[in-house]
Length: 469
Image (cartoon, rainbow, N blue to C red; front, side, top):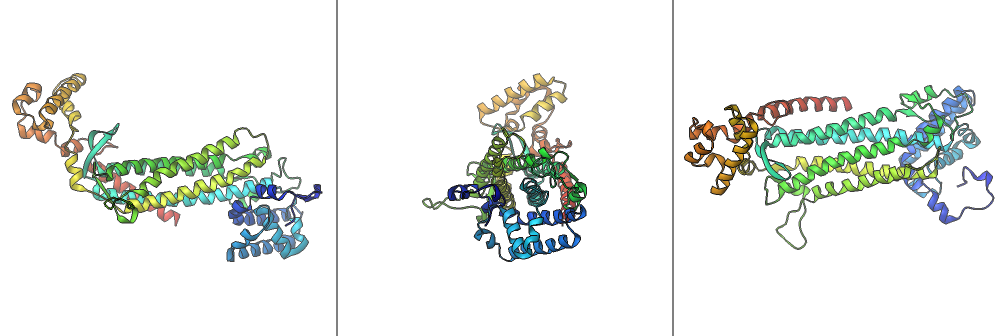
């Protein structure tokens, strides 16, 4: 296919450089956006009296025919020797409408064309990612609901700390993913400016109404500086960052659950649908779905790092280095979307072992903080109460028992302020149920609080699902 820029050149391009230079193998996925932008540009030229209305309609008909052909047989793109998706669309349009196709690029550059295509593609990709993220949130809330009151050990530093509920654990990840959702929304607001009409770098010389053109493409506004517009890839880096952080959160979930599924913890069981076995050890059930979620986080974070490095030293305006943006973005988005889809499947195929979770929540002195709090309520300053509780834990450790199982004489000697409590009352005050119930403040792990949060999330997520459909 003849190059769009061939007039200046006499010699043929080296075929090895041609292959190195071509972007059609990966930018072909923007063909819908390229057709959409070209149709809008044709009508903008007509409104500027550069084309007649009839010419604009004929170009639109031809462009829609190109789109219909690709829709029927996407392999036409792979078979083409065009340099990029823009060359392919324009070349096929010329075959359909003849020399009229040569007028379409008036006042337009591939620089503002690709910037527009990429922003349109990004907007669609973000919407798809939001839907996938919503599904993971819904799966987590669905699992949290029946486990809102199920106790389990909570950890800091991977050491047992205080009892929490399984529902509280699950809703923590819903909160993380909610922040991810807001990052996607914020990104869209900054991305919602059309570069089309910026030309190569200095703006178009024809009286195109760029504000109306932006509106016709679904943008909120037009960009205000042509130099910035054609070279801006902030939205690419920002989307890769949002994807990276979402995968950081899925990776943390995976890390937690990999431990939870181990025989050492035994809190969680994965379905056979999301686990694999060993080629050597017949007894193994490996959490490969979780490990891949954890591993792919590094892949997308690497794409972000690569994109930032590409952008950091570029002079204004457009440079061919920016061709590297699409492979990074497409792979980052594809990987993130796949991870979100698999994460939802994993969550829906997970089952917490209620007996194991509840029994382990009673072990490891997880109620030591509440012992200190009981002393505070009896008038002991917290720092003193903290030290006295630590001494009591040491005494229990020496005897190989939990705090509530200390001999009564030892308990009264160590904790004279609580001597008025009977053994049954002392045990009840330090029970997992009492420890959980005390934490009913907003954000706490009390079952009643978790149940309320589940109800709120169900309402919110149902509303979003209805709005998105």
